[in-house]
Amino acid sequence: MKPIKDVDEYIRNAPEDIQNRLKELRAVVKDAAPNAEERISYGMPYYYYKGRLVYFNLWKKHIGLYAISLPIRDKYKNELKGYVTAKGTIRFPLDEKLPISLIKKLIKDQVKKNSKTIKKEVKG
Image 1 (cartoon, helix red, strand yellow):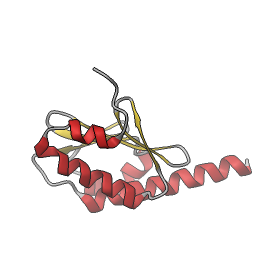
Image 2: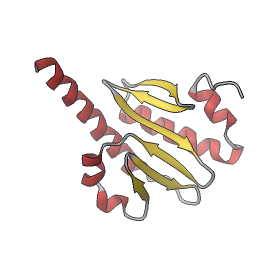
Image 3: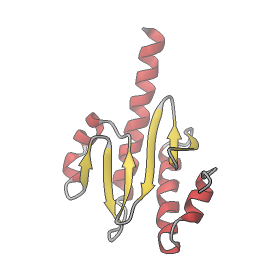
Image 4: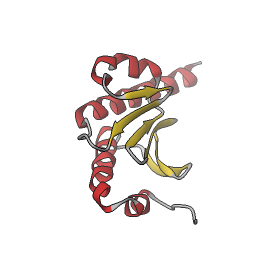
């Protein structure tokens, strides 16, 4: 299997009934992090903004959102109840609507975190 070259191809390769959901997730990421660079890493959509921002990947029964830091996940732990979470991972079941406003908040906070981390490194 040849490597996927961009997010458009990643979405096209997904089952037709899931493509709109992936497009919706992509739009949320772009809205929450308009300056993030869109890439493919480890065969999945990856967004870079002053460091690793977020990845997503389609699985058989869920869409995984990756690289959201623990302090941010903890901040939204009440809103994340009902979703499977693990180290750096949040799973959104395919049989439920994506929690768009929650995803947007998670990513916006991740953008803020990455911006602060870079500032500390520059000052340091």
